[in-house]
Length: 166
Image (cartoon, rainbow, N blue to C red):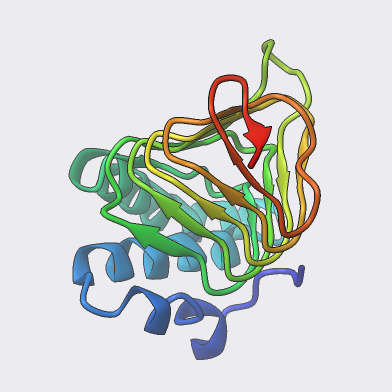
């Protein structure tokens, strides 16, 4: 994953995969802009970044119902389907070409605990929950309503509570 930079390619990397969803396209442009302005974390950038981070946070949480902290490491082309009730812990790592649907939660089991890592091409179904320091392998699919608490191998589809391969 590359460090955020303030250029058009960085800001619009999620645009095409979210075509037809202007509300989410704007949210992701604001997310990438806030990320770029927050780095490096010196005093000058924080002052410039503050209004954008506040605007992004308000827009994402109040209008899109998506909690995606600016510090979250997210690869290119994040695809958000419907964008309601989505929660990312800021310590999660999300690869390229990941797709999330409404109701998805990526978090830890205990406060300050390990968080999930999603490799490239992962697809998370409606209301999927991924908890703890688990790794979801490249191209894996997590079915709707699944609760993942163990690693998922690349290319595997898991469903159920707790999630099991099918």
